Length: 112
Length: 143
Image (cartoon, rainbow over all chains, first blue to last red; front, side, top):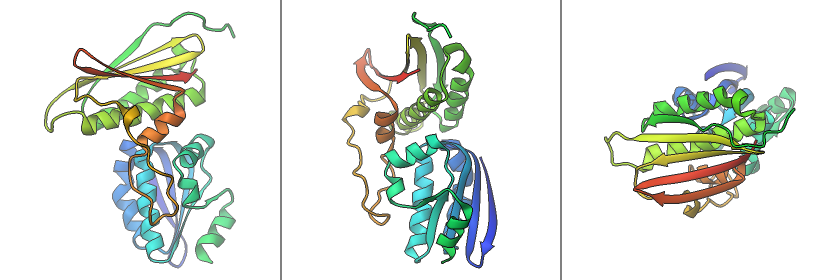
């Protein structure tokens, strides 16, 4: 699992995840991910290259989203592959954070 | 493609009760895709359910600091694939575990407990029996 952080606007970042968000992948990114979520008002999580999402990875996303929302910010997901999106739907995550298919719309959502 | 109408060979993997072993389980399923003629959907479902079941077992089935083996058998029978997970931990039937409510908002969203929700959704059937001091969880999938 790889994680890249790209500044997109003052206080906002795009977090690009790449790999399997399973128990190993979450272990690799958890600390850095929660630090980013704890220090930004706008977070786009780019899931396009995440090939696998398990409940442990949902924990990572939920904790991040809670941290951003607590400070009045916006936390959104971008471009999950179909199987990953099904995991998000089944677990109710799609009701809790918006999913965008288009990076411009995601950018508007977190910087508005 | 000629449909598989007979029961395949049973493929087995034994791992220790260590979280670092979960990745090996997922890679092992990747290696079985050809032999069991698994669709990408089936492969994902099997890997997801195995991760959830095995993480659960490793986290809760055993006394702390004790070493145990967890055995996984996978086989194909016609259009179905079965995965059986066998451990000698405390009796635990995940089917009895209550799935968390769908949260209304982020504030009230509970962290954790979603493994059983995912297994119920991605496996077509879940069977459990306690036999000879072992838990035997059998998951069925459309191949």
